[in-house]
Length: 91
Image (cartoon, rainbow, N blue to C red; front, side, top):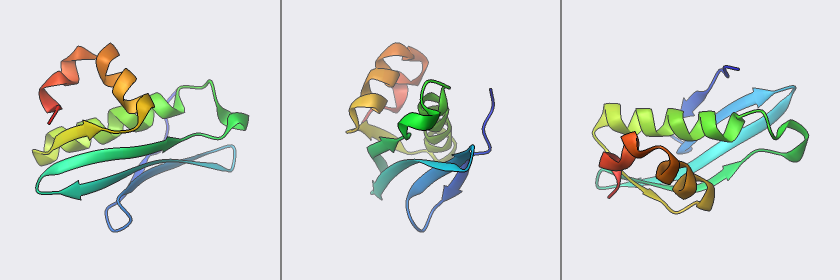
């Protein structure tokens, strides 16, 4: 399943809407390091891979921008451990 993920640079947030429910990944950017602080997918749309898609989109954005990543959010940290092709992004 694919999701139309948007990047709101001003809010430092990636977001998508699934069945009219907003799902988000929040981050802080400082000195070229993106710290992922929160991935939020409400239960009513959980289990569809939305959080995974948000994290992958955020990491692909970080790679394209030349940013390093600190996965402070536990979901993002586990996701990165399970996808070693993104290990080069770890700050």
